[in-house]
Length: 432
Image 1 (cartoon, rainbow, N blue to C red):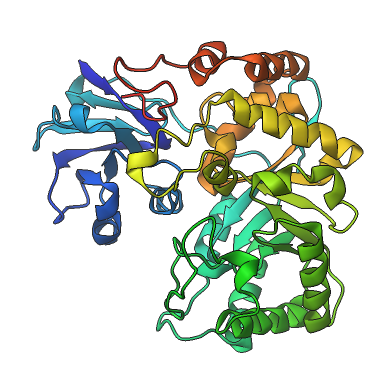
Image 2: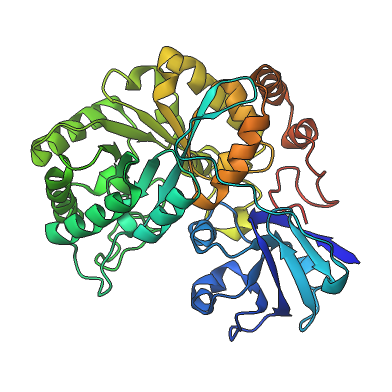
């Protein structure tokens, strides 16, 4: 039996024939570059080998919603894959294995946690695994996978089939369907987070939409057509507020005064009282953690954008993927500082994004005191298993060791992860 170690990404097992062409069959294992994903995914191959993909990019993150077992492989290693060969792709362990007739039973996915019971660490600390969703379909996945709540509705992805400007009736119908599927779970809606890297069909890019340092999220709320869409969504939420347990998040806020202004504006337009929280997605916002609870009901740390800002690297660019380092000690020091600054309000903080899903990282975050996470639905059973096996006293020591490490190479060693490949940068996310 031969195997090639890749980076695990979307969990699951796929068996099929390797191909590099865009015309794929349901039993194909497609070798594809990140920029080709949109063109090929409508064919729904059995599995994916993404070459030099940027793990924190929007195109890659959307793969979790499709549930196609996926691994990430370097360009050099991808050249060794032979088209037409039948292989097994294990997106959980990051393996490509052949010949398939020599393979014993592959690892099975853990059972989802019970929706009726709280989830605890091995020593009895309660942990909430919530789901980040962008449609009714992914909400159904969240319920099936045992999510304790809908921690984040990515409302900017709620668009009509014809792409027209959404109105109040559209949002009322779409959100009520989503909430009915989620019932009785509470639902937190992130208000529209429009950005250059998340284009919507009803809006053309405007001057200033230039990535993390430009116009996005709340910075567009006074500009048309975002202003009209926001008002339409708030009108729909106002009609639904007495039927469902709803909360709101304001995206990409940096300053407290900015949040005060927009909370006041939103509550005025909303016409009803709901919990309103802030998305802390920049170092400035995260370093203000001790002050947010004076003005916000909860805080959701958006780790994907936080890392993009912290490392000054566009997360959608494969060329910069090695800079957005999920194992950098400085990232964990920042998150530990935020946890300590939150104090008794840490139970009002939720971590979002891919970071908790990365191999070895959830116990570190638990050791810092974080206990609420909003993740991709497909990952919930795997993270629940890790949670139930984590002893918090040991996790605290692990978190201390990680924060004291000198570089990401040392962090990987502490977490027992594979060493970097010769010639790759220490902070490379892609190990193969």
